[in-house]
Length: 239
Image 1 (tube, rainbow, N blue to C red):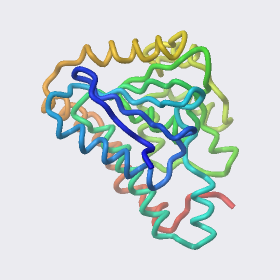
Image 2 (cartoon, helix red, strand yellow):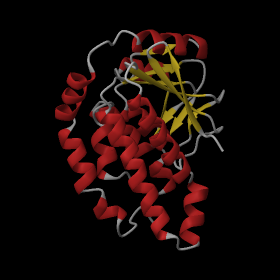
Image 3 (cartoon, rainbow, N blue to C red):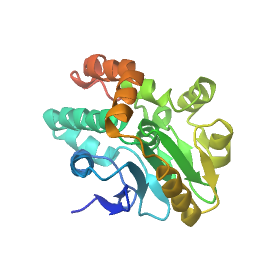
């Protein structure tokens, strides 16, 4: 089943999450990484736009039902594999030698908001969708790496409020805090603006990749060195 796909539009790779609410599980991580592999092999591509085909959702985050089933079956190795594979997705977005633009066309909750923060730039529609970290309400604490790369995208005071309250934020407020480049009127304008913006980047991959590697060095260290302290004992959900 195809849940993530990509297509080339001129020199832009448009990656589309295409599974309704786009909840993230092991299959999602695998298909996202496969898309990124293919994009890197296409040397004519100069930028990436990440969006969703759903009318209401960008991504509703982790597939909690899938995760709960794995815990119930004591399928702990699969859970660990999923966590490490999602971290691979996050690291690759952070270090991709191409600009990555998230076109947030609907609700971005939890890991859905988080994956957009791993991108370099974000656009979001005004007409529908909230941006939210509901982990405080569902007893799932952030991993250290998640905190590190969300902080690059969301100013600390706003992130602190959202993290501890589960507050739902709209596109105009995100634009005010420079979390997104622009709050678009609707989906059509969103995609047009994101594509136009992505098309302005024509820098060579080596310099772009090296700049991101140096800029995000500490974030990558946190993901690789600190996250396993919580993944290995499966300290992922509060009881």
